[in-house]
Amino acid sequence: DTEVTQTPKHLVMGMTNKKSLKCEQHMGHRAMYWYKQKAKKPPELMFVYSYEKLSINESVPSRFSPECPNSSLLNLHLHALQPEDSALYLCASSHYAVGRVGSYNEQFFGPGTRLTVL
Amino acid sequence: DAKTTQPPSMDCAEGRAANLPCNHSTISGNEYVYWYRQIHSQGPQYIIHGLKNNETNEMASLIITEDRKSSTLILPHATLRDTAVYYCIVTSGTNNLFFGTGTRLTVIP
Image (cartoon, rainbow over the protein chains, first blue to last red):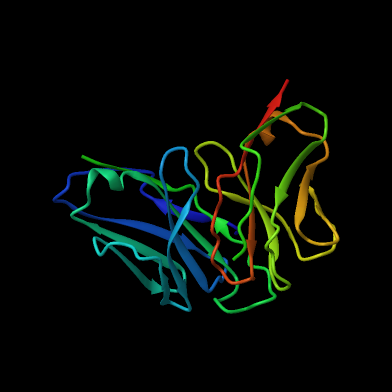
């Protein structure tokens, strides 16, 4: 199984709502990531989890709260978002943890959750 | 991680080879060159990577110049399904992918 799944595919939420995005992989990968992609722009790294611990936060606002309950699951909790947060949210995973300099780290991406904030 | 420069768009006739260039003149000795592509409305897909030798897999070939300051991704027989945005990324092998603006490849029938 070389698939990363993301749910839901689409999400519409108001600025006062609380919602969560879910990502799952069963490839035994120990690193998982969240990316944000605005329309016609490249993906931007948000968070990196290594062995279920947050290792990188790319200065993401606190209204985005990641969680890694186990090695197969990654959640992104959303609260008090703004309309400018509307984007495609991509999850990815890879074999190796951060810091394996000299190793390649092919990332497997999910199809994304398209989020609209009203 | 070193910065990369790619042409914003390219066209290629179906069945012909697509050659996508990438400049990475500030690459350092332990940095790898990765290529990913993103077909419309899908997540990015890994294509190939290399350090200094040329590489080939079932999807593509990667040619890296001897000074490692540039590389070319070659799709040997482009099909309509290869229409996508292609990203060249240089990274030291940690997990942090910083995508540039990429090249939008359009394969023309």
